[in-house]
Length: 89
Image (tube, rainbow, N blue to C red; front, side, top):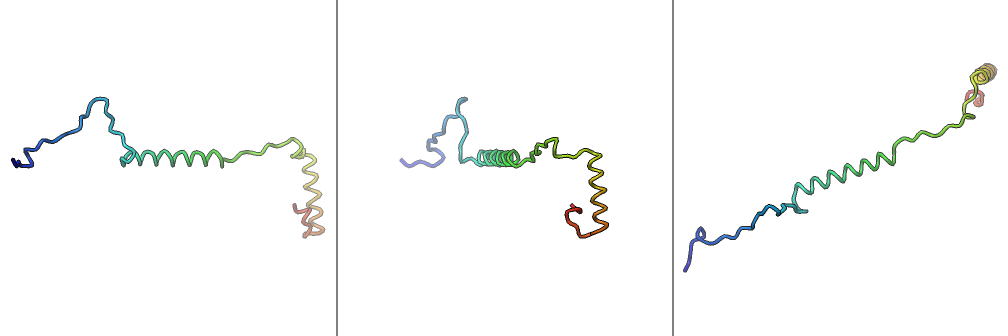
């Protein structure tokens, strides 16, 4: 009772309407998971490392007339002593 391979009964899985073809080892699934992971990583890095402006108080900036007087005084000090670091700053 030998039979040829073509005449053997082949069992095929039933692909019904509720059967999903999802597998974690599928190449497409791994590519999508890697893409989502990379996007989340760069999104988290951007959120954590974004430039946050420092809050300024009103006392940090001098008034314009006083500021111009300080600049003129520093220029006079630099004319006398060009190596004066305090006047240069």
